[in-house]
Length: 240
Image (tube, helix red, strand yellow):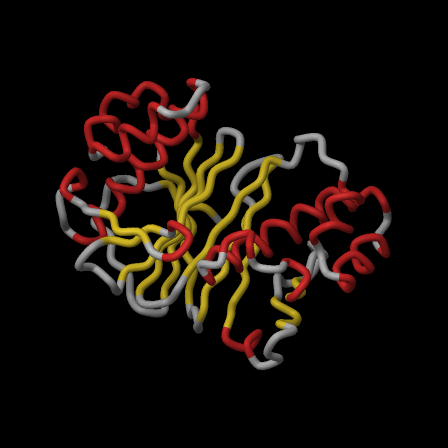
């Protein structure tokens, strides 16, 4: 269940996960406000986008990220300094305990926040035309491909995006990027069952250290979040 955010003060205990959903189209009229929060490197990056819709999405995503971080950290949003780890994953300088990740697709932005644990999040628009069979055979594990095509064909697209977002969230949490072999771990993809990291082929015990959680932010969107460690509670917010 999603809760509408009303500018209250935010706090986050070590075993709590906060997920945020943002509709980009509802924030277009605040572009100037978000732009003023960005630092020079973020503005330069925004201007590199060829299409206005992509530029706007980046500005809104970074602006909301700064506002939420400012609330969690009790800091001025425009004074937050980002550092970047392996494969460009951002973190906040001098606030190592708070971990976050961000993803966007279409007009939906997802953000995840947690204390101390590494986190990855992903969202995908499911109405985009993709060759499910071709992509699955190229990138999914043998077990995932078998599970996917064992389902009735009417469920293939949803199961495909379940699998893709869960795998993407996991490798983002690991900080590995798409250079990590996607066939070396196995995730669940059936919507009727809990999201699970089924196998990590390089170390059979590694899967026990991770949590996967499926996200349905809006109609026609599927997402997932992955966290290394135990999570006792999840709160899902809509940032309006």
